[in-house]
Image (cartoon, rainbow, N blue to C red; front, side, top):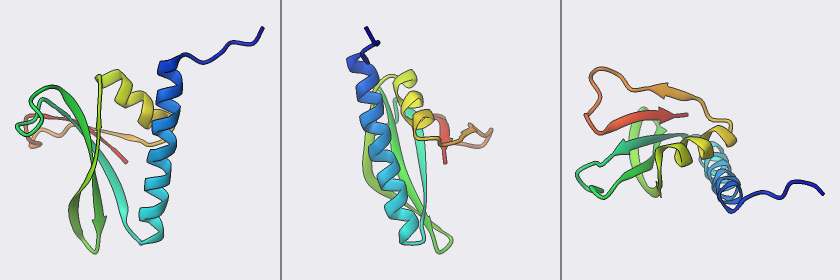
Length: 101
């Protein structure tokens, strides 16, 4: 009998597909998407979240796209979407964990 995916694996795949669609839509507009993972930021103190930002015309614009969950879950989504992780930089705001592009 073939292995059936778990509910968690299905959730990762579903979110990864959404991320890919969002990335594609932005690229068609000439924008680049970045997803930054935050650990208990001031405006989401209850946990870890990932926010999408768009880069277009040399400006970064935050969007209303927000993913929430455990760090491993968010990383799994971005890995499955084939995004690349950019490690936290020394001068980043304290809640920033990493950014995916």
